Length: 79
Image (cartoon, rainbow, N blue to C red; front, top):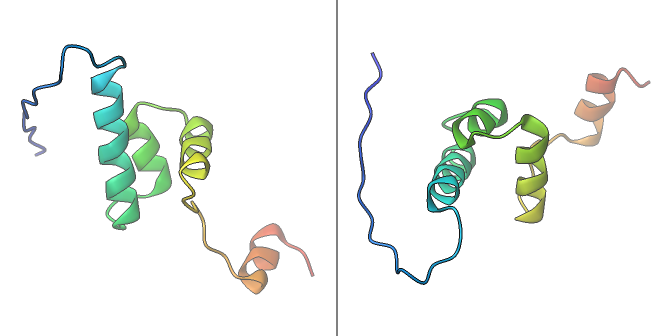
């Protein structure tokens, strides 16, 4: 059974942006970086498509997948 926790954060009135989206994204990225969730689950938690989440990771300089050359060739079926 999952449970939710509500966190209240004061945000300056001059802040421009979607605070809820930014918090969800930060939470998802953090869980992904700590290896708690897969990239697919992190995208879900962020409320984004997998593609958009991968683009966001790249924008932040974060590698989504870490394959060495041999693993990549095997994954892609390249000899």
